[in-house]
Length: 455
Ligand SMILES: Cc1cc2nc3c(=O)[nH]c(=O)nc-3n(C[C@H](O)[C@H](O)[C@H](O)COP(=O)(O)OP(=O)(O)OC[C@H]3O[C@@H](n4cnc5c(N)ncnc54)[C@H](O)[C@@H]3O)c2cc1C
Image (cartoon, rainbow, N blue to C red; front, side):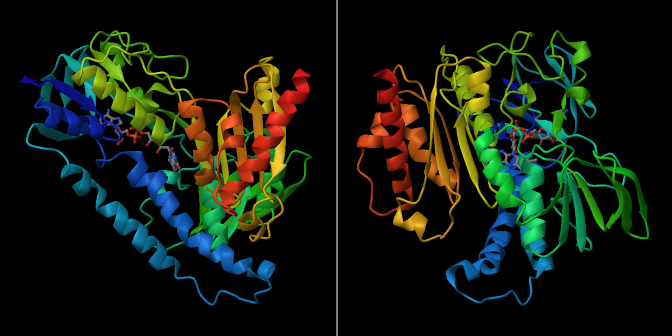
């Protein structure tokens, strides 16, 4: 049996831990059943955002008449778009491999537990006093065997479809539907209810629904029934909640209906590692599972399902394992963004959640039009919504919808990180008339609302 100081199962974000541990002189085994780098660079955040770079430009041209410019698109080379994206993906495995030093041994295959501290990989058994599970999640299987999940388009090889139906209402479904639609592929987004981006704050959701529906053909309250694949085409019946039915066809069908735990291959039944009722691995505040010396980080724990959360956790785990850090990690806040047009960025609780949990709060919603740069976009919908604690000026949440919301949000995050008090955003000096200046009246409004509340 091969002995290591550390075994890592899953080379997504946890590959960073292998790099750091290898540099610290530890003997590391890292096991990966697919390409090194995991979901984010191979079939997640990065390739999906690379695609959005192309559709962003197409969108700007299509909407140029808002600025009195009469422009049209002559041709979009969709093959080139996918070639470029596929090429990026093809280099990831090698790129990640080159980051490991001689102390790190890579095992390609599916790792599983023989016992709490013995791992089976291909025909070998490995052991280490510390084992890290970082196996991520996988897409929920499409309801038709010929249909795609998001994994099937990264890389997208072969003929690019001229039409696509996407089932789902979350950020992956919306980002992909936005991309395909903008680059001229006939796109239909099927949503079972009226709820799109259902976890966002309701007010933001409403604005998004209104704006996004102008760009993408969305069938709300609709499910695909009797799906068949014949002659390189899907045919299906679209059934609306009100009972109406219509025939629908498209060359591709993609399900983005959520992701699920990836732990089935780990043979956890051979260990004392416990999972929750969704199949995600339970852990304590130091990321340790119910088996001593076995840790879990990232999506495999089923908490945040975001790349930056996984990376932050891996970074902290490396302090616990390599620097004897005794501090648990508690996230002060967890931001996210949806990189659609319109773009959304959000941190903290939604208003509906604050009400449900009976949290004392005040909300203010302010448009961006006080910023000349924001005004120059000639978009009317962008807003910033603050949810604040009237007792101590704490920012409980901020929700933004508008161009570059994800960038704008970082100034709110900085305040939340250093000293969470909305008054900093009111008192700080802004560059005039930058887009970020739109946050000044939003902060002024929120502070005024708190003062009125406390009068
Ligand atoms: C289309 C898409 C877009 C996304 N966009 C964003 C975004 O914009 N922003 C954001 O923050 N997040 C985004 N995400 C989510 C983000 O990709 C994940 O949160 C992140 O990659 C999780 O990292 P991880 O290391 O926990 O898991 P992963 O990166 O999934 O890594 C797990 C690895 O473990 C391997 N593995 C699993 N089981 C075994 C086994 N038994 N043996 C060996 N290897 C195994 C897998 O092959 C995989 O490589 C997106 C996801 C998708 C699918």
